[in-house]
Image (cartoon, rainbow, N blue to C red; front, side, top):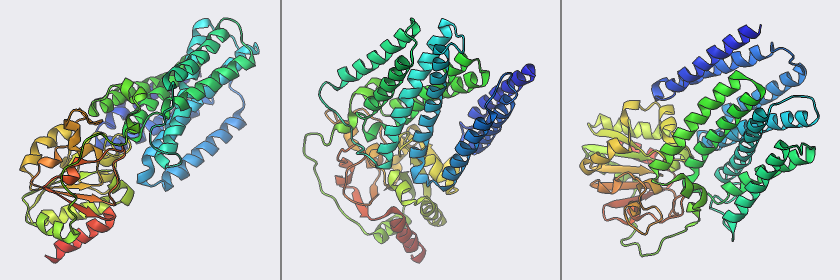
Length: 457
């Protein structure tokens, strides 16, 4: 039976890797998710046959409660809340790894399980990383959900205090490793690890949230992988390694897309900056949706730049209708997708795919930037920081961040609910440019007015 279990785990690993490969392209992403899901189901079922496994009733209850809750939440959660869901699920994975570590360490303390020094080290590492991922993800969720202020929270001697908390947690881990294997040592080890996760996340502002989500995804994968080694479960080892590697690569790509080092994300308190020095030149120039639609109707090329405002208004279907009306008039329509637009990696791609917009119309930053100079109109829907020309100027908190060159289009229309700043808390110079007009209002309602205006022309 054990040979059969290992064979199923091997097939599971193969499907995990194949599924991850399928997820690399929007056209095959759904298929990859389904394959990985079936693989996880097979691994879970076959684990019930593991020699010596007990407590079946509790395991089944846990699966039913957790799986049932996840099913209901996934069905009901709005696309605008997807980043929060990803954050909290990341945290749950890290919390599960931490819980496994706690159980194994307490069993070892009570003399109920023998573990080598190497396995103890892996269990402690998995417990530390998993606890940090859990509490950090909960803070990220609270910021994204608006339960707490999304701005960076700073206080005097913050980094030394954070490092002290982490150091003491590591000291408790070392104490356990060298013989002080009491319940109190395990408890304080986890309490301090959880506290460090909170302290590590509160100074991270909203502008860096896509990187944070990716980072905690990597943390969760590493924690699961370490615990898999500690308890000898190949499925956990493989799943954790794949998730950890993918999360790490994604974190690096996200940080690169913002031209920021991982160190500056974690310790720079980027979101604490409310506004740079200097005076913004120009003025805000409002325009009615119908007037903007009339100008787009006679354009040759329109580039649409979606942002979080589109997600909040759930306006992706209206965007598709606008695209179709423009194309009926012979207008070339393309979509410019910034790597960190929205609140998580790939946020805009998911929303536009949900509306049925063809994948070939979506272009990333490097592909689309050279085309803005030849665009008659750039339509910005709720995007802010990723189109801010201030990123090109030294002295700006955004300096060096790659942006979409929206300001180089002949005419720019910005759909925005109000006059507030972006998620990073920085004024957008694009809004004051001579070639920019502001179209105020809910994105869905504004786009609907544009579509109707085009139909009536």
